[in-house]
Structure formats: C-alpha cells, structure tokens
Image (cartoon, rainbow, N blue to C red; front, side):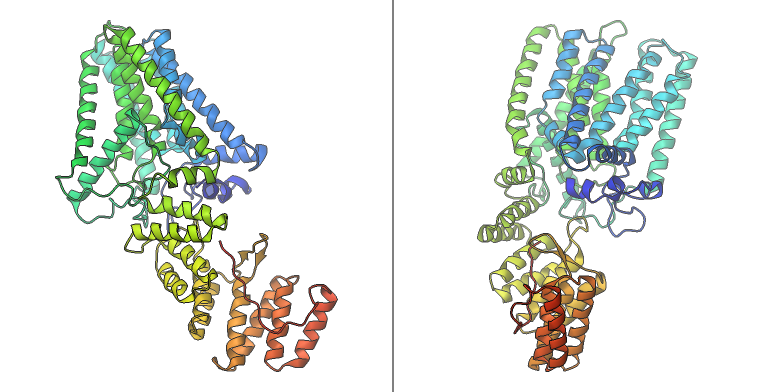
Length: 606
C-alpha cells in the first residue's frame, strides 16, 4: 500500500495544509467526514514522507534509505539503553545486534508505511534515555521530565502506541522507589507523568476515537464475528502467532487477512495450544524478571523494563482494548521485539552460565541474519514480494488477489483468471469486490460476456476500499457488459450511474493517457441502440450530446470524432457527419484516413 499511503496522499506532495494534515488519517482520508477511515492519526510520520518527497520526489531510493537509517539508529539506541540499564558493553552490543538482525523487522523497514513504528520506537528510546537520570535520582527532572513528555507525545503522533509509554516512565519511577527510596521529588514526578500521560491519551481518544468506521471484515474477520467465544478464542490464537513470529520467524508474509488464519470456532481446536505456550512463556519471563530484581545487582531492573516495553506495545495491537484493522501485522512487532530482546539478553547476563547463554544468542542472531538474507530480496519490488508470498500464503484471499494482479499486468490472462477465482473461492460470501471485478474484466476481454456480467454484478454490490479503486470504474464496466448481453436500457442506466458518481470520470488507456471512456461508451450504447431500434429514437440525441461533451473535454482524441461521424451517418444526419468529418480531416489527416462505419468501444484493464 505504499502507493496509496504516499503517492496518493495529498499531504505528502501538495502544498502543506495544516488543517488537512490534522483532519486526515495515515492514508490521507478524512477522519470525520469520509466513508472509511482507519483512525490512524500520525501527522509526524506523514510529515517525514513529505520531507522525503521535498528532497528527491518519488523517484530514487530516498524513502528506503531513511527507513534503513532509522532502523540502524534504533539498534544503536537499544544498545545504549541496555548499557544505561547496567549491561556491560559486550552484552549491550549483542542486544543492539540482535535487534538489527531480527527477521520480523524486514516488513517494518522495507515496507515504507512501517516507518511509523521506526519513528515511534526511536522517540520512545530517546525519551527513556533522557529520563534515566531522573529514575536514578541524578537529576530532579525540572527540564528532563517535560522534555521526555514532549518526546512521548511526538512518539504518539508518529504512531498511537507511543502515548502508552508514559506508563513506562511512570512505572520505571515506581520501580526505582521500590528498589531504593521514595523521595518527595520521585513521587511528584510519578504523579506528573501519570497526569500528563492520562491527558495525552485522553485527548488522542477524544480527537479521533478508537472505532474503525466501516471496518473491512477481510482485514479483521474476527472483529465482525457475532459469537463472543469465537472472537476470544481467535484473538488468543493471534497472540500465539505473534509469539511465534517473535521467537521463530520461519514463515513471513506481508498479509494475513481472510482466510489465512481460520477462526477458532471450537474450544477443542488444537491450535489453541499455541497461545497457551505463549501465555506461559510470558509469565515465566515475568517471574524471572521479578526474581532478579535487587537494588545492588547490576542490570537487575533491565529485564522488567523490557517486559514493560513488551506489554505496553503489545496490548494496543492485541485487540484486547479495541479491535484493530488487521489480523496479523509483522510490522506491529517492531516495538514489542525491542522489549522481548531487552528482557532475554538481560536475563542471560544475570544467569550464572552467561557465556553459554550469550553463545546461544549469537547462534540465534546468525540464524536471524540468514533468514533476513532470504527475506530481503523478496521485498525488492512489488512484483517480487507479491509473487513470493502469493506462492506460500495460499489461503489469503487478498494475497491471491494481489498475485493475480501481477499475472494480469504480465498479460497472463488465463493464469490471472484462475488466481482471481481462487481468491473468490476463499470467500463464499463474495464480499470483496476487487477479485470479482478483475475476473469479470478478463471474462469480458475473452468474449465471455454472460459470465463477465455475472461477476461484475456481484462486484458492484461488494466491498472495496477507495484507496484502491473508484466506485464508478466498477459501475462502468458492469454497464459495458450489460450492453453485450442485450440489456441496452440497463446498460445506459449504469453508464449514467457511473457518471453521476463522477461526472468527469476518466480511465487510463494502454498508453497511460486519460480517456473519457464512460462518455464514449454510453454514446455508443445509446446511439447504436437508437439506430438499430432496440432503444427509443430520443436516445440518438443523448448519444450525440455525450460525444460532444467527450470531445469538449478531450478535443484531440480522434476516436471520439470518428465515433461522432459514425453515429451521425448511421442516424441519417449526413450533413452533420460530413461537417464533422471535415473538421477531423483538418485536425488530423492521418487519423481521418477512412470514414468510420461503426462506433468504437473503449475497454482497458485497470
């Protein structure tokens, strides 16, 4: 979705409009008046995209370079935080290296949209490092506390998770009080941090809310299921899968939407063993982290701080407090992985056989590097990642749809149609409009008009995101198919429906030029229908008016002039046809080589 998130977001490339920036979500959609919004309010991340564009436009590798650099900075800051918490330099270095090598980060770094997580973690780590002297009672906090609070707010404006990390600083202070002493300054700082954090979180929730309007059930089918038990069991399974991705990321995919992870309909489903292991592992780590706490022991508080980072970043994405807009998102694990690694490395350091533990971590890091080396080339471009995951994530309707798009662009129409149908078969409710739409287009192109009309009829009643396609495109192609199955009046009505949605509706031709395709095709349908007698005679003038408007919008388009001549000749209006033909000859002698005998339709794959 980088193309939708960045290249179609006016906040990135148009003149800066602060009101629009603060009214639109991460995808550039209005959060208060639009039909669909994710409620992901991340203005600082969007501004970073804007700065990228200002420096080098959309060309080149600037966006990727920034993401890679941000990941390196986060890795260095992880090591610095570990060192500040008492880890020796070698273990701090190991912590940063393990973070850098974790394969689950490939999506966060290589998928430009993942920058929200990178910036959020970076600001959280800087805020925590700045606040460290306060926790250790080295500074009273008059300057560091407000500065850290500002950084936490900035982290929250990069991604919502950042607002939760006021709890990290307040909890760290409480931990310091339990391990050392409760001085008046510490108590005041805790109260101030809790107040500021509550205020920041409250304002964020008040401003946009947390409910996703018109949530796509394909993105998170659990959220829309009516049975509470099924929802709880299925969310528990997601927690187990997230744990597996953190610990053993052998299988990676850019998408886990419907039906990659079937819902847990029954409590006897053996997949529930995975979340049981995950919960047990979490509480074991928590117990070990608490067991090593000691006021005079080196790095004793590092494991529990890591657990706090893990918990504070995981809960907002866990569907526990509110449903999120995705089943599984590997990029969502960027911040939780930082907490888990901090805990594990710190616990290994506190272990008596720390050298053996460090060796095991190095082996894990080497395996992580190998997995990254395999995964990174798959993200080379849109086609490579779509193909790689399309061949492994066979049960995701969206992944199969995207794979079919690759085949369609390569003009492998039979393979594309088979893959679109596989995507459709995954969802028997025919909810998603896009695979139906593209399958209908291919069937129309192959001359199977009855089947095309059947698919396109389902498409106009399905769900689609305005980020990926405009509604009028589907109505137009449905109208076109209706003409070829001898339903002329319905065809005209649906052409008019497309134009009522967008009166200036255009579609890119094979050469990439915008064409007034709806005007032209409606004119052909109305004109031919009137000439042949299958439509009333008044439709003839409607056709001429539509072509006149198409010519006014695109006066250099020879096709529209030729169609006007053909319809005028067929309608018996020879004088107007001759005059129009002479205008075309004067404008483009080559394009006017032979007088047209029939109206030419336009059809283009999207």
